[in-house]
Every structure is written in structure tokens, then in C-alpha cells.
Length: 289
Image 1: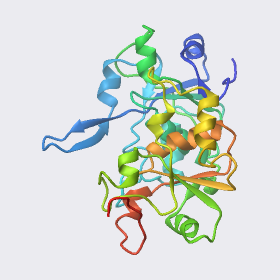
Image 2: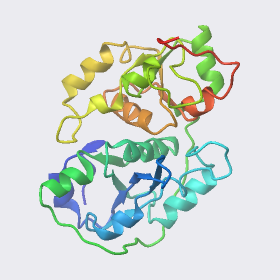
Image 3: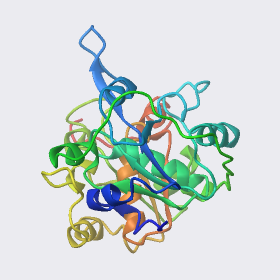
Image 4: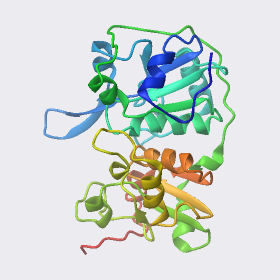
């Protein structure tokens, strides 16, 4: 057996270790689909996983199994009991090493990375390039149902990795030193394109779009480039960073990257703009009105 080489692993490493008995590979994909009315919504990637996936991988439905289904907002972090149960049912034990991947821009895989971090579990990594790189390289794939034996998973809750609406408001009001980093595309950040209840951004935010963290081959940029992008907005030396987006998914890629670059005092605002923009008492900045 071997340990993970870091929190970002390459396809070569994974291919060499697929036979490790303590390895758990998780497809975390959710896919954007037209709901038939012209509106695009996220749906489970399970059907695509059943058709083809990395050998030995299982699919975790982030939209349901790893979300609080009783919350008015989508994809909110569930309670500790649900997390322990779901990871245990998926064969994740306290001694497992876990590699996460998805079929898009890593944001669903990094969302699950953040969830593991909140659980106090560190033996987890994201596959660089995800399914698209694995497939492009012509690596082994299989289809159909796969499962691991159930295991016991312990949660050691890390609340400092979660930012609340009040934490963000304190940053806006200047009563905390937190730097707010928005992970959405620039047109959404500036308010040119309205996606949520109100256009624009949380006041005082800077913008590092999660899509700018990736190269054309769907891999993360090299460390020097990533460091330069976050250094430019002061995120690497900030006392604390709060990352946010629309619903806590895209921002998780920023969380993951900052964590990888050594910024340990970083939290994710789970409600993000889905929560913030529906509260008319909270301020917004917009460049267009």
C-alpha cells in the first residue's frame, strides 16, 4: 500500500494504484441538462457513470446524498450524521485513501474534497484532469454497478472551514479581516449577467473565476501560475479568505487551490449568492446600475 502523493494526483499515479485494497475512487459528477423548458439544471451524473467510468470507481450523488434535502437552498451541507452514514455506505473508512473526480471542471470533485475537509478527513485527493483527461489518454474504463463493502466513517467536524452569512457580513462591514473571493465568471461578478435574485457581487469582493484555474487540457495550471493569480488579489497573505460563488460549488475549486497553495485559513460560504441575494437587507455591488 502507499499514501497519496498529495491532494492533487495525476492519472499515471491512479492507474498504477487502482489495485490498492485501501483505495476508494469516487465519481462526483453532476451534469448540466435542459429540463425541457429551456432552463438548465444540474442532475445526477450516475447514468453517465454507469455507462463508463474508471475501473473500481463508485458514484456519489452530491445533489442528494451529500446535500441537506430539507434546506430551502440547493446543495447545502448536511449534518454530521448524514455525512458519516453516506461515506460509510460508500465504503469509506477511517483508513481509506480517496481519489475524487468528475466529468467537468473539477468543481463537483472539489466540493466533495471540501466536505471531507469539514469532516476532518485528510487522506483524500482530486484527480487532475478528471474523467476527460483519463478518457483522452485512452486509459482503462468499465461500465455497470460497482460498490465497496460498507465501512465505519468518523466525522471530526471542522466548523472553521464553513463561513456563514454573518461571517460574510462582518467582512463587508470591516469588523473582520476576511478577504472575500468570488469564483464566478467575470460577467456575473460585475453584474453584466444576472443569474441570481440580484445582479453583481458582495461588496468588497475580488474575482478569481474557478474556470481560470484550468488549462486547455482540463488540468489545473502549474503551481506558479495559480500562485500568481491568487497573490494578485492578496489571497495568499490574507489573515482569512472566504470563497463564494452562486451555491458553494464553483467556490470549492478556489478553496481546494488555496488549500493546496498553503493558505489554511480559508472558509467556504455555503449559501453564497443563492442565500445572500434573496435577503434584501444585505448590500450588493453592481457595475451596471
